Image (cartoon, rainbow, N blue to C red):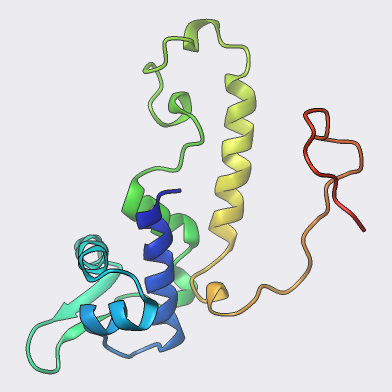
Length: 153
């Protein structure tokens, strides 16, 4: 995920926490400590894609165009970066020189779908507070062949 998408999620979470409020780009920059040029760039993209609405004038600014519960993290990433793809062959089939002989493409498709499903299940509303439930720990011994740290109970 790019820094731009990360910042987009931070900005939209800020909007969701003050649902119905209107913010200027400068106020968002000050409150989130994201540089103003980056904030302005992201706000333009989100407005153009219909996630935010904007009003000009003294009482103008940006506000959410949709309810926070109807916007998923996947939606935000997709709007800012384009389709979510873990590898080149998932996002743009035919672009990878290895694709005709690749034996792991189907595995990447499964992984990509799992990541996409997880991101689709988390809404912008969810991002305004800690998620309930606990994370699923990795199974002992799995994924550690390359020296990855083991999950502890």
